[in-house]
Length: 400
Image 1 (cartoon, rainbow, N blue to C red):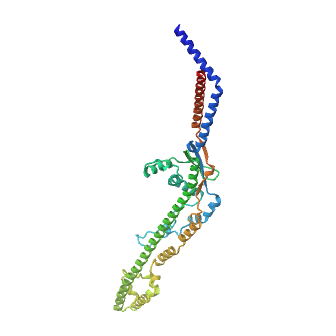
Image 2 (cartoon, rainbow, N blue to C red):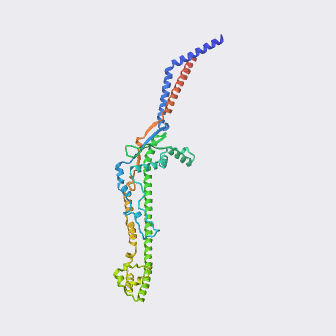
């Protein structure tokens, strides 16, 4: 009987509890509403700081109008050879150790929309520009790290999480792929500031890279030309010395042949003269030159000694000097540099742009999963608080 009575009392207590809660249902509902409003306000205030987002930002190449500023430079790059092809230039009398130089052509990419866009993406993929912007705008709080090494490592890790994604190979702009920057974080405002700075930083870095590369290639080409001119000068000097040696030997030989003709009493040979002196080879190996007579031989010695300008008689000298002169006078490099300076890439006006980050059109997708959890917890907390309040209030009334 005692157990039955206790069970009935428990049932009565539970029924009374439910009745009490039902009686105070509006108070419970009010507590739930207040709780939900409270967590909603808190969530709204903290949303920009604590809500994770996924952002996607498109890269844009330069316009066709901006590309037109490089036309003159690009045309010169593709036709920067000398007027003649040294590879096709052959000289039988040049010794085997002489190798004709290659065409002069500055190995520098055309600065069109596609190449500039690719170079811009290369700079972004190096992530250094992102690291600088992350530090500037405090995307990571340095105070959270015990030393600068850990902070820099955290910055590098965050920068490495930034993805440069090629979404499609073809866009509305011919041959230029659609490329986007993808990133996840909790501070959308600071991320847009980072993108704004990176857009400018990347162009500044690329401008410096192009300037350095152009100057380096220009210097290499100038040095190459100087080396070729030096080789040609040495070759010219050598064939002049060879000529002087050959003439000295020739005169000694002619004097010997003249003495032989005198000893034989041959002053001149009408038959050979009528046939033409050219029919007799004038060389050190021809021991019959005396047959033309000492008068002709001595006349040749006299004419050789009277040569004030020996250059016309040096075989191959004219062609070597012509090559040297053309290289020295070739204005290709100066014109290339002038055209580079006239383009945005080489200008000092700071108006160079290879591409840009369209940060204003960034698409943000926020993670609302945590917000839903907070609202559910708010409802539960409000309901529990409301029920406890109603029960306690009813108990206090019963005591009174």
